[in-house]
Image (tube, rainbow, N blue to C red; front, side):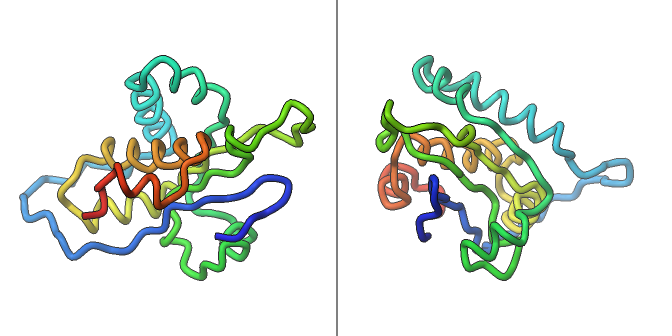
Length: 158
């Protein structure tokens, strides 16, 4: 991803999996999880973090939208809004300076519809686990980790 001033954006891009859930469930009374449900899942993920990471996570604003805006998709060079499940927007802690004037809070964006699409396509993981993964991945960018560094310790995509 290319840098965007004043901070930068790092995204989780989704590639559909061929794995499918084959179990039978009665969905006649089931509704899709809404943004409040995803917020609850993120709150659980934050509560499970070690204390120093919890404190840092509290400094980052969480935004949940159905899809990324056209401006975000254009900036990242993405055409399909289902490709973007999460985004960190801000200046990583490793690059911040006390001399910097903050232009706004750092933000972790989660995009509900692409997350739900990935969850349905995979069919082999709990939604809470996927939401936690996307959130923690974006939080790692807040700590200054690159996608390559995250991939070395997070074998999620294998």
